[in-house]
Amino acid sequence: MAEEKKEVQKTPEQKMDELNRQLRGYMANIEALRAEISVINQSITDLRTAEATLRSLKELGKGKEVLIPVGATAQIKAKSEGVDEVIMSIGTGISAVMSYDEAVDRIRKEIAALEALRRALEEAIADLYNKIEELLEEVRKVGQEEAKK
Image 1 (cartoon, rainbow, N blue to C red):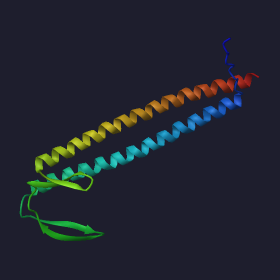
Image 2 (cartoon, rainbow, N blue to C red; image 1 turned 135 degrees about the vertical axis):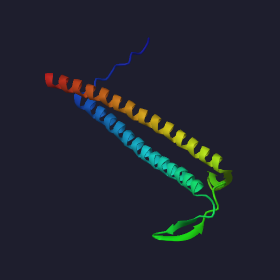
Image 3 (cartoon, one colour; image 1 turned 45 degrees about the vertical axis):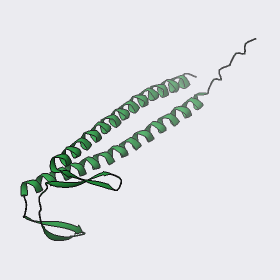
Image 4 (cartoon, rainbow, N blue to C red; image 1 turned 180 degrees about the horizontal axis):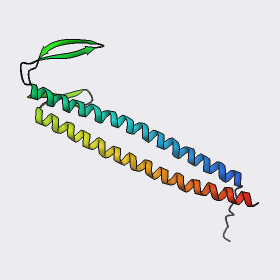
């Protein structure tokens, strides 16, 4: 003899509680994704600044005097040796000497990868908003059912 599972009917209050928990979860996920996007945006800004600085130094040429910030409001004078070689971070605590073109190419690839990641996170946020809309529709239905009683 097969056992039949009886579906336990949830009260409207239980349904609403469950829907509210899901909504709060989706909203928390959206906030976490937004925070991640903010970090990505800052990384992209930093990389673009590095690229622009390298380009400016290349245009400046060798032997030109530059000011190098050393902290707070202090700067020191230095002479540019050019940017034929750039020391780039290639991993945690590891750096490598690259040509100017290799360094700029690496920076651009990192920017492109971060932009792709940002787009994926933005799509995930859009999906979560769609799920929220579906849940809100369910909340309306439960509310209407409760109002009929």
